Length: 232
Image (cartoon, rainbow, N blue to C red; front, top):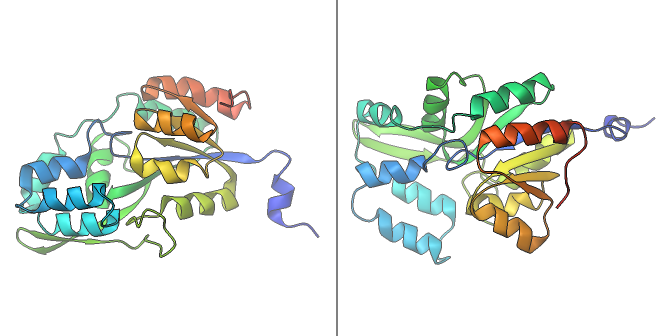
């Protein structure tokens, strides 16, 4: 008897995983919070991460501990975060084709849920680091999706999340923009890439299609579903 995966191979399905910060949102939400509410020391952690001294999870954990804000201030700030105006249409198109859309981020779950809900997208599954309030103005970051095998030492190992969905759906279309997407893009079945991720995919020979916004990505989605993607 063949297993389920082999039966699905002749016409494997697609699902979508998308990065959040700078991909769905127009700014990096964590950076915007640190610029607004961060106590001295968060910039040094950023430098240490950029220089490879610490992993992204250690960097984020230290930076979140330096946020000085109330819950009301957090919510008010998140109300100002804009998303790509074409993202809702992209989600609707993907779901019309029977594709699951999942937001996978090395950012902060509470922030992502808040922003998506404001734009009518609160139903989307979000996998990200967990923000916990530990005092009136103090916060802690938990990383339930971390992996000891993660090459980036991320709070959320995107490569593991992608492999989980490949096992369930067959093929994953990954959408991303920057360094947190470099590692996982090499594991995806196809990448919709913008910003820094385009050059990375080009240099590594990763199958990708460049895009500038989700209105364009929505048009590309139909080609993927119909099996007409231009493999780079």
